[in-house]
Amino acid sequence: MNWLKPWQQKREQATPPPAQSQPAEIAWIPADKNPWSVPLLDVRPITLHMLSTTKDPQCAINSNSFIGDDGTGFIGITPSSTRIINPGLRFHIDRILADGALFIPRQMEHKWAIYQLHGKILFIRSWLRQPVAVAEIKTESNWAEILTLQGTLTADDEDPAFTIRVLDYLLHTHALELSFPVPLPHGMEKDPHKAAMWCFHHFGNLANYATPYLFPSTIPEEPLRTISHLHMAAASGGVERAAALMGSRMPADLPGKDTLTPLHWSLMRDDMSMLMFFLSRGISIDTRSSEGATPLMLVVQERNLTKANFLLDHGADVNATDLRGFTALHRAAELGELTIVRLLLGRGAIRQPEAQGHTPGSLAQKGGHRNIVELLAE
View 1 (cartoon, rainbow, N blue to C red):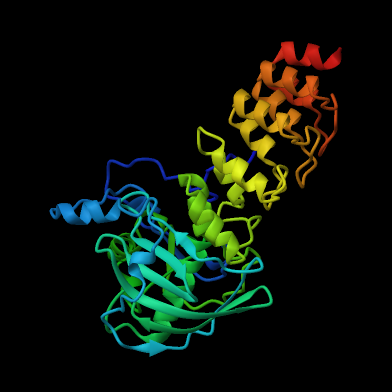
View 2 (tube, rainbow, N blue to C red):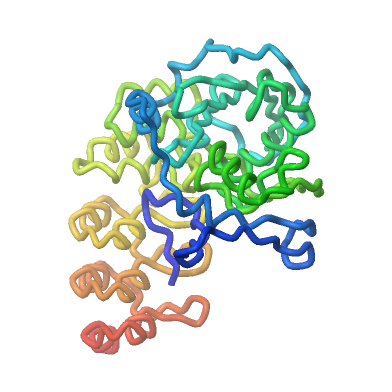
């Protein structure tokens, strides 16, 4: 099964094309062969195979400096461009759009950092650690609307309509981790290799396809979510900061960008102090991710017997099911974790619950874990 793993980003990178000894061929994908119904350039032979290099060591330092950065140091820094446009783009949100990171670069081939702070979205070129555009947003009734955008995203003289297309692209691909074509400047498609290099320069290895053609952009079903400041506090052990954030009515059960809640994130730590803090504030030990996964399911998926014991000792529901109907026992059986299977059974796990045609026994059988199959059949 394709279980959601803790701390794993949602994006699944497109499979790189096979390595080529000849210069990469940037091919066109016909309009009737892709979801956007316009001709697309497949720029992956460039964007997924190139590595970013720089002679300026500070650029390399900058590009890798965002892990753990809550973005507050960028508040009040304005873009060099004073141009203001009205994008009018709308996106779903889940109750609120919490202060935090919409996208954090984790390698030099990620060219952007994006934060939502105090009702503004900051678009930061990661190599420079410099905001180049700031959007003002309005949120209400599970919607966020981008009212204005100050700055530019690819060039000082870019057309406002093109800026809006790039903005839409960044939110689809970086914030929501969805596949979406890079908008190309007019005429660049005449030189596909140049177009692919332009995509890599501006968007790194998150650019897979590109097009100069306009197409209707529908509002994604997925809501915009951040790695909130409460998630960051949970991972770092910041009890005082977590208490202050909860005191300001930050929902402690709000799923983050990876669909997990701050309580799930507290399990990243070796100690259980942050988990106990959340439990002391009345947060359920069976709080759910957007997919319905409980903390117990996640630590089982991580093969962590110690944390599974701890959660069960503190009242975790051993038979809780996710939105697809799978339990912690399904996960342990498929992984071949005999010790964890025994633990779950000893704590009252139902032996053969069925979900989407699978039982723990059938998953163990498929994985060749005969000792678990026999144990479950007893």
